[in-house]
Amino acid sequence: MDAKLRDRLAVGLAALALLLALGTLMFGRFDPGVRLAAANGRVFITAVNERSVARTMALQPGMIVTQLNNVTLIRFPEYVYPPSTGIEPSPNPDTGEVPQPQPIGVEPAEPTDVTIPADQLEALVAAPMLNLQAIQPWDLSAGTVANGWNQLQISDDGRSGVRDSMPSVFLGAAILFIAGWWLASGRAGAGLQPLAVPLAVATAVPFILRPLEATWSPPLIAIGGILLPLALVPLAAGLHDRIADAQERRLVAQAIAACVIGAIVVGVGLAFTEPWSGSGVARWALVGAVPLIPGLAAAGPIQPGGLFGAATSSGRLLESTEFAIAGATPLIALSTDSSPFLFPMALWIGLIVVAGRFTVRPLARLATRATLQRDL
Image 1: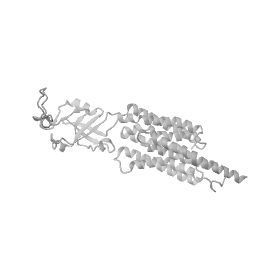
Image 2: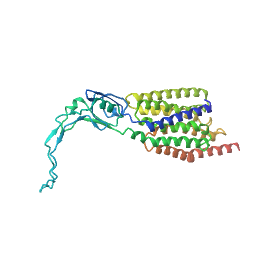
Image 3: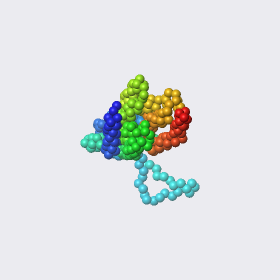
Image 4: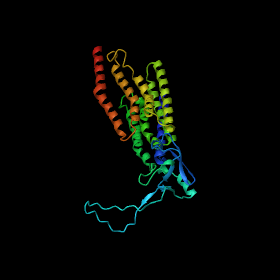
């Protein structure tokens, strides 16, 4: 792929990711994954998304909603206590305990529907869901005042989870611009300078797209599942072009295409299907393999004959290390799926700096001295 076209594609994908993330932060809302309908004066759960908070809370279609957005729809029996006289009861002289008032009855006698006009009930169902309590129909008559009723609930203000992902977007934007500038300046190594734009994009986009996942909205999760592996393709293409052997390039290109397609299928599938065991690991591995496979292939053997077999061995050693690091860095970004978002990336960068200072560059200097001595 042409370098200019590759960089433009990477910039376009990063801009699209930023636009979606900022739009989600401004207008996106948490989707609990529950669909409601009003019938016969009651509100029922009609559908539950397979991958949703509601499914994890064991909510199921057919359950009766007892409270919605702080509006009580079904009143449950409660103990009725005598009116307060304003006089504190005297404590027991032997134990010192203050006698508690005893109930004088139960009101209402059984769970009772609250009468709400049909238009108001429809408006309540259509409004964004902030909190909900629901119960199975058979549990409605099985509960008692003493033991309570087996109700399930969801509570969210609709925005807290989306707001919590804001630091990740800021970190991704910082990586995009600061790391892009640092790589383009050549300070990270001459081998990575041509890959500055796609490497910065591939590292930043996993952080930028976090708000889409925070909404739990299937369409937004599906969009993220498509955009994330595509954002890693320019870096994979840049690393692929640095593989020396033509046959190996063809095999790596096929592996990249297979990983991209597999990652998209899994990412979209996770948005609309019930999570299966290992689904998150499968997506992480498929997406991370898109740049990792060509990065390792581009690193390849240092040189035929080893460190001392060619005059370019020291340069090749640094170049191989840079390609391997470039392929692995997006995998670290993908592994960072919770706060604090900065810690894993900071640890990875620290390890790179330490390894470069005390391992790779000393070996490169040793190879250079050995080559000079051989020539002399």
